[in-house]
Image (cartoon, rainbow, N blue to C red; front, top):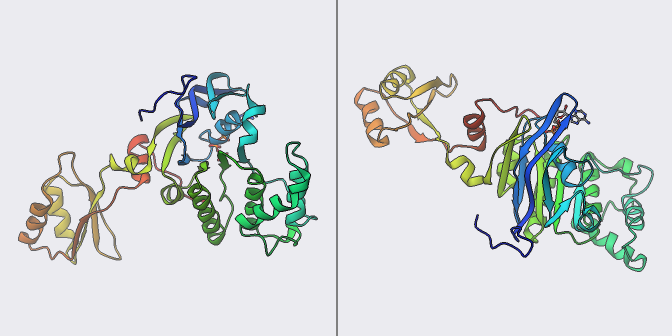
Length: 324
Ligand SMILES: Nc1ncnc2c1ncn2[C@@H]1O[C@H](COP(=O)(O)OP(=O)(O)OP(=O)(O)O)[C@@H](O)[C@H]1O
């Protein structure tokens, strides 16, 4: 992306930028030479399997730990040196919210707000009320936090990050441990927050989550950045799989193999035959005609859209652990 440089030489529209960022623990290179660029206004997915270095990176970005090499800038300022001026503009939710179960949701927020020396006590009630409203917890505001579902606790954590206006939200695995309903709620909330112009940086080990929520993504594997960019571009470079629905899968497989299609698999339930198109794919209309000419009865024929998962597998040669 060509952005006009800001006065300090940084891209004005990049809210997180790292160069050669690395963190070495004894025996483990947790993050290895990371060059990350998060555009302002994006919903940026930081994707990688467990242990790939996401949390370590986020901790460095937030100034919680020192990198062993390289540099990180957040909102244009170097970290961890500028923690004091940067962190008030960043709402962070890392490793789950610290809540008191015996206090109501509202009182938890009042406590957190009271701990912020920049927060005016006279407007506290209004601030807390509007944060609860934004995350849809107004009706449950007076319930004790220990009676909240995990999803509600996570929303309360988000509300605490939203007490002050933020330029950037950093959420570490915000849907981890939630049931599907809780996941949907958090994802909807993230979209809504992003709709207001806040840049959201969220980590996840769930590919479909990133595809559903994010405009941009970076993919990590074993401490290294594999790729980054707009989500649509990341999967566009990957060829989709050819899929043929037919009552004659054996014959279809023969014909497709004869046209260079590899990794042919038949779904035993649907009879759908899928396979990888060769690097120089044949004309699809002709391939379809060849199937029909060979006596294959074709019910469905098409190329499945490549997913981010396909891109990940193509880039790393590894499967992606999507459990979770
Ligand atoms: N404090 C630490 N001391 C030693 N090794 C660590 C420490 N923190 C993380 N690691 C190691 O660094 C690697 C990256 O861990 P990290 O937590 O950043 O990954 P992650 O992608 O966030 O995974 P997860 O989603 O499981 O937290 C792992 O091999 C981990 O064991």
